[in-house]
Image (tube, rainbow, N blue to C red):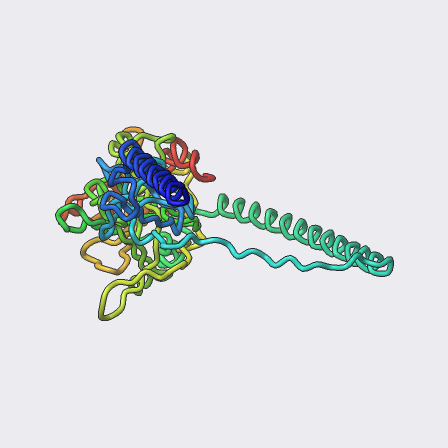
Length: 410
């Protein structure tokens, strides 16, 4: 009796084991299997490398590196597609393009948060003390405003008196040496690298202020000839260099990288080529050691001078008027050269002719009236080794009226 009951319990446990094995087999057969891609650590998983823009940065086309698609804000995250030397291929918002490698940072640059200090509620005496300080500050501010107003009125009076004095001055009041000393710091030497590695040299005139293309710093704008930058190698981060000195008769002392820039809403590239003028933006200040490579001076001021030339009024330009031409011709090297002559005549709307001797390298320099020191012209194309009897100048009053006045206050 007891033996029979024991056998029945053993058979029942075996049946349960068979059923469990059968169900487990069904689970293995019909459960969904993972593909290799779903397993972590597979070869198809790729780790994206993300960097951040350290400054406002040009995002350039993959097809044409000279074409800027847009400007990326400082701190913009970018996905590294292919890291190179000067240029890195990145992806932003599912769009690929090139950016300058040197302006990428591994970590996002953020401004430090100011610590918030809790102050207890002020008492009545403290409120009175603060109100008294506010009144004192308001009084000082009012006094400062009145002082500034008087100083401004005095400066305006002096400026008007000086203008009237200049208008009444007789012809030829300035000596050539006085003009060179007073105006030479407005002239710079320019060199642009072409695609073959050669350098096209010329001169330029400080014409105004602008914003650097590669940062938020205030920059100096240079006016020069189109033919000087026409073949500049735009694949270079900075295709041009500018030399400057507050006293150029003693040689160049300060050097900068510069980039060609123009304003398509004001004038087309084809018009600028026809007239032969263009602009450069100062981008970086350089340190040129006696030995070793050129170094960029970080965060250096890009305003090379606080002065800009006074452009002559159209009715002040008369045939026979004496003038002086300042520039960096090839025969002068790193030293400013001055030549004298007269306005010989007009050549169409945009040009003047002069008897002043102009050599290669003077292109882009400045021609100033000896009677007032105002900028009357800019030497245009002169072939190497040719010192012409009558050279061509771009008529600066016309250029200022039609184009420059729409960019700067002229």
